[in-house]
Length: 193
Image 1 (cartoon, rainbow, N blue to C red):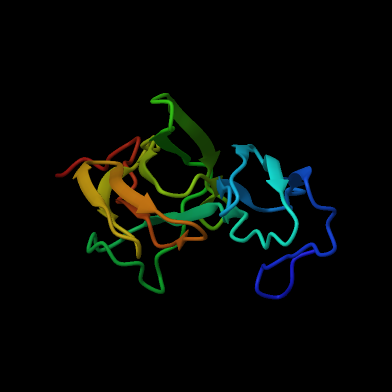
Image 2 (cartoon, rainbow, N blue to C red):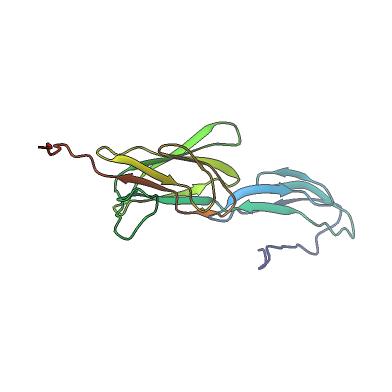
């Protein structure tokens, strides 16, 4: 097993032998880049093979890279004063559909969809790191559109109901990607005398 610093070593290996080093993938991590060290070898997923060591060889830097998935969270809320800030008297709006999209390393569009909780919050987990995301709110019926707010990892607000250009790195926990709505639309407006 690796030590507290992630290092490992094997000693007393027989010389003039071909070795294969394999990593058992740890839970809650995403594969990163693996690299063969100073004595060569062939790298594949979680494995470095064809490492031939001669007598006295001290092979180094046979490394396995890992990355943590990212998360992104926010809230859909009743922005009573339409100022783009969540005030103490402004409640969340439940059961609103929120979608996150990105392009994977093969150029294919990927997405996840969720609905807001009773308090208006939403959360996307297990997002691939080193990726740029777009978050879209499906506008809830009976509400007027309010201000949308970019969270703590940056991004932009290119159009209503969209927060884009959010680039997340390994282990990022992006927060406060919020969507405001306001003034529920009355189905039977009071006539003005």
